[in-house]
Each structure stands twice: as C-alpha cells, then as structure tokens.
Length: 569
Ligand code: FES
Image (cartoon, rainbow, N blue to C red):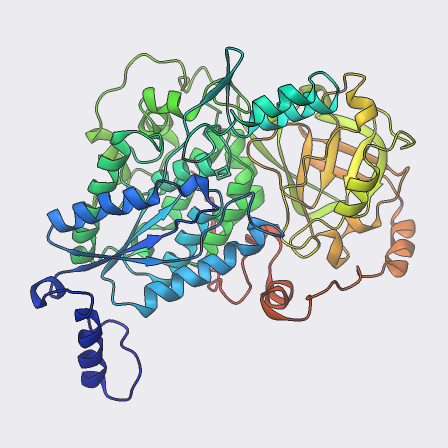
C-alpha cells in the first residue's frame, strides 16, 4: 500500500487517504495486508482478440486469492490491428507508456499482463520492463480454425489468399462474403504464425510467461487453468521480487531471437524485440542476428510458410517441443518467471510424443536464415526479408523499379490498366516507414497489380520501408532503413531505375551512379506536413520515433545501450 504514494508532502497522510478510498471498494484490513497483484484489463468491444479477457481476469483473480494475494484489475489501452488508425504500430508506444505509468502509479507488488493481439504483448512488456515491477504475461491465446467448403481457414493468411483470388476474378462477391464470415471463427488471436503467435512464443521462450502458456487456444478450458496458475505464481513472484530486469536479460533475448528464427516467425517481432531490449539497455545487432539465422533451422510447419495452425502446435506439445530440438542453441541458464531456468523448465516438462508439426533439428523445413538481413546502397541501415516465405526464384533478381510515392498513390494507381508494369518489375513503395505513414503500416505486402494478378502472377519483388503482417508471404523486402520520409536512399528511387536483390549475398542495390544519387539528393524535398503533425501525440511520435532497427520506440524511452546481442554462441 505504501508503494508510489500520491505526493501531498506528508507520506502518512497520503497513506491514510489511500486507505480511506480503497476501503470504499469494500476491502478489509486483512485483504489490504496481502500482496497486491495488479491485472491489466485490456478488454475492448473493438478487440475480438481480447474477447475473453473478462473471464481470464476472473481466473487470474481466483489464482491470486488461492495463493493468498489480493487481485486488483485496472484498465490500460488496448489495440486491435483493424481498429487502430492510422496504424497499431503508431499506438504501440502509447500503450507502453500507459502500462508503465499505471504500474508505477499504483501500489502493485506484481502485475499480470493480459495481452494477445499483435501490439499488446510488446507494449505491455515494454512498459513492464521500464517499470521493473515483478510481472508475468498471460496471452488470450489463438483462435481455433474456421472452414470453407471443407477447407480449413485461418486469419489472416487465408484472408490475403482469398482476397487475392477475388482480385484475380477467381471467386465472386458472394463467395468472398461467405469466406469473410469464416476467417475469424472464435475469440482469440490470429491462429497462423503471425505476429500474435510469434510474440506469444518468444515471450514464453524469454521466460516471461508460465511454460505452456503460448499455444493454448483462447476458447479451451485449459486456457482458464493457465490463467489461474498465472495468478497464483504472481503472488510468489511478488514475494521473491523477481523483476523483469532479472528475467529479460541478454540471454533471454537471445533465446527469444533463436525461437523467432526457428518458428519462421513474423518479421514484426524483430522490431518489437529491439524495442523491448532497448528498454533494458540491450541492442539487437541486425548483422549478428543474420549470422544467428544461418545456423538456426526453421522447424515449425505452420502457415503462412507451412500447413498447420496454432491449435495443431498445441496438440504437438507447444513451445517445449520446439525448445527440446533447439537445446544446443539455447542459453539454458536463463532465469524464468517460474523461478527456475529455461533448462530446468524443459527438463520438468512431460516427454514428447510423435507428431508432425515440429520437425527434428536435423530434418528442418528450411535450413537456416528464415529472416535475412540485407545491406547495400538502398538500405545502408539494413532491410529484412522473410525468405522462408518467399518465392525461391526471386531471391536473386534484377528488375526495373515501378515506384509509388505514398500509400495514397499506391491505392490510386496499382489497379490502373494503364500502369506500366510487367511481372519481372520491382514494386517500390516510398513514405510508409515509421515517420512516413506515420506508424510504419503493414503495407509492405503491396498487392500484385490487378492486370498481372489476372494473368496468374502470384509473387513479385516488392520493396518498402513499411512492415508486413506476419500472416503474409512473398518476395517482400521490408523495414528499409533509413526510411524515405527522412531522406533515406529509398526516397531517391525513380521509375525505370534498375534494382538488384541478392538474398544469398545479403545485398540490396540501386543500380544508379553515386553522382546521380547525389544530384537527386540535392533536389529531394521532405514530404509536406499533414494535419495534426504539429500537435498532440502525433507530434511526440514524429519528433521522437526511432527507425525500425531500433524498434520504433521513442528515443527518450530506451535505456543507454550497454550490450549488443546476439553474441557468438
Ligand atoms: Fe489480433 Fe490478428 S488481429 S492477432
């Protein structure tokens, strides 16, 4: 109760007032003497991924009380991918600040963070890392799959697949509307290896979630038992003062990066892990991450790169089935919220069984480097590509640039029958980075121009400073740094320029002379300011957001960098 007292200049009076008001909630002195476990309420009528939060809160409360604590829920912002204008990434830092300050402002001895949808898990962990109060993550869990004409469907890989078929004229409006009602058939998060599934798995690997918590579907009773156990463990965590900085260590982040690579996870997770690590003075070195990727095989056969869904991974044993295979690559001494090390947690798990979702280390789906880091005169600060989800024939490709200067320009011209574009061209999108859009939208998956889609073109090289949904696939170069809105080389690309992509060689080159680029640079003009750029949260965002390689956090929220990861294993 004494934690974070309101400032009246008299601490005893502050405590006296606090007790008077909390008693209005009906608590007894006995209840108030227990460890207080805060629970973030991230429910919203706009967030179907968090539809089950109210019942999860009840289960967490039960666990807290069974362990002798006092549970107190409090609201934070929530974010759903489809209900976050202009983008959910734009609002992630706002949610992180909200979470950090609410944890700090209220007398919680530990906190259970309930997240699930893509940005909520990183935002909650960023806030908790900075507040440094004992914390555990509980995710809402993935949706179960839907079906259409006997075919299993999952959000949102199949959203994109069916939309592409509709654009190509392969299915009609009636059928696309029927599919629309089947893509998200239950509460919970997208059930392919998108950002939500990736963040759940890397959070468990990092040790910030109880073992087994990442994959349990949202609608299963086991999910509620997991919530109850999380509440009970939070009470012990409070007593042990096991704070995030003791768990979110360089070792833990390296385990998270290893798992990210092995699951063929979402490219967005790199941005989020960089931001979370940055809160603790840990810097993610993209080139070292690329080297790590070369020796980390992709083991998990889930959509969008494979065939299964999260409920199948749960039936295959969940994360521990992956961790067992990855043991030689993991930092097994990393401490977790159980109070035990990752290695001890793996040893304590039930033995594995025959399954087909997680491959053996020696027989991977993809040998290494599911995510590759590219450098070159087009991306001096780096760019990434999820090569495990791309057309192999396009991984070495030279083509003519077809440039779109903004999202609006893209929307206006991509389907224009007069658009001068061929299947071998490279589509370039400018001004869709952290400051450009703003908020780095998931626009990197540029649609195939309608006239090419109608001819059966399924993939093209596409380059932007935007992000891509983890549920998408294709030869898509993302996170080009520095972004075009601040004058990065991407801003200098013109229609007809030649671009060379060489993923095995890790390079991305604009084949234009340096003298010509210098001339273009002198003529380059900053994009015009938009309405509201000079006020409120948007001004704070535009003034302080970092580039993708630093996690798009606000520069004043990251801690001084003291260590670079991943280190040599
Ligand atoms: Fe929430 Fe996909 S929209 S996880």
